[in-house]
Image (cartoon, rainbow, N blue to C red):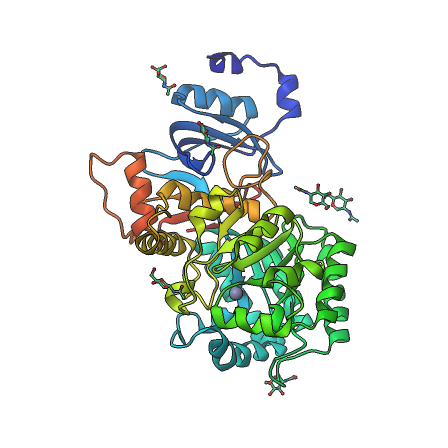
Length: 455
Ligand SMILES: *[C@@H]1O[C@H](CO)[C@@H](O)[C@H](O)[C@H]1NC(C)=O
Ligand SMILES: *[C@@H]1O[C@H](CO)[C@@H](O)[C@H](O)[C@H]1NC(C)=O
Ligand SMILES: *[C@@H]1O[C@H](CO)[C@@H](O)[C@H](O)[C@H]1NC(C)=O
Ligand SMILES: *[C@@H]1O[C@H](CO)[C@@H](O)[C@H](O)[C@H]1NC(C)=O
Ligand SMILES: *[C@@H]1O[C@H](CO)[C@@H](O)[C@H](O)[C@H]1NC(C)=O
Ligand SMILES: CC(=O)N[C@H]1CO[C@H](CO)[C@@H](O)[C@@H]1O
Ligand SMILES: [Zn+2]
């Protein structure tokens, strides 16, 4: 192995590659959808811009020290129980709905929107209320290990800007969208088409002017029933003009699908309504996709759109269970979403567990859809999520050249819900954390190599 010779590498190389952090210990990450790699005695070196510059496996501590010396930094030893894993990715979350997360689970989608969601979101016309709520939700996500999220804000321009500011200040990575609604909405929570488009363009320009690669604007028509064709077309044009991503909801609930059919009898299906309005691109994220037809899945694949699987759907709002096994086999882009507050919590760890049970429940009714393995669910929560956010080449696992968005997990942290035994190896410890761990175990969170949270 060439590791010993590393110490001899000339100062010239050290000058060109610098690291600010070199970790030694265990790490776990997805190599691909089926291959979850558990590394012990691993080294990960991260440079000042947060880029991973070196990854080694099966290394002695002496060799690791030589690598750290090469970069002129001290070695961070993880020890026998702690491990590194990629940051978790939430591809679908409504930030304002955090204020009622975990309550109001008694209704199905359309009644739930009118009864709980719209009145709560309407309050975000008050910027001080918005600031308080958005500070809390972003803190909560970061503590739970969500390093990247795709947020819906509300229809309000000023509050949406505040969400983007807060994400930037706290160092999380996010897509942030001002929501658009110009029809079938209550009087107290609706915009005119012209105002909606104007505010969206202002919002996009505002976020782009930050010139911060971690905070990106995303065009966010709420869903077809709440957007006129004129608005959808205008939003499609804005997404193309500024080359920004798009997010919305698709095929979540059977009543919703029937409503879209009634609103757009000229289109063959729900997916096509987005498509003809320029809203289905390779930077689009569609949430749910529980009941797509074969033609809709083909169209999603053809356009390269991503799917946010929100497994909580069938359990919280009783919408149904997505065909994740089938869509993975088709090579669709899929990640996980909490769908706060249709989903009852902000935790991606919890969404992993719900996703696991959702797949098992589906396999009972559909024996051909084999339930998902831990490797597959973990992929959805990390590398798959990165793919959906359009960041697969820069995020999602520990590969040289990618950005270091990562968590240090300590199974023995203060108050830990996990106990360990002498026979627990790294694989077992990781599984215990995934199934029983929580934010007490996430002792440090990095985005772009920068520590944004430390217990
Ligand atoms: C996943 O990676 C492993 C080796 O690391 C490889 O054997 C396997 O074919 C890959 N699977 C897919 C679906 O790419
Ligand atoms: C790790 O290193 C040891 C000692 O050099 C060697 O025996 C072992 O085969 C290596 N394991 C892997 C997976 O490379
Ligand atoms: C904000 O919306 C609420 C609820 O619809 C309304 O009562 C209030 O007057 C609005 N406040 C402002 C400042 O527009
Ligand atoms: C945006 O940031 C990049 C990289 O940090 C920098 O090179 C560029 O000059 C910045 N552009 C503007 C318009 O500030
Ligand atoms: C996405 O689509 C754009 C424009 O249609 C194209 O230029 C780009 O290469 C595509 N990107 C990917 C990753 O397919
Ligand atoms: C609406 C819908 O598809 N609901 C499903 C939720 O999950 C259960 C268990 O798999 C199914 O029986 C329901 O049909
Ligand atoms: Zn949603």
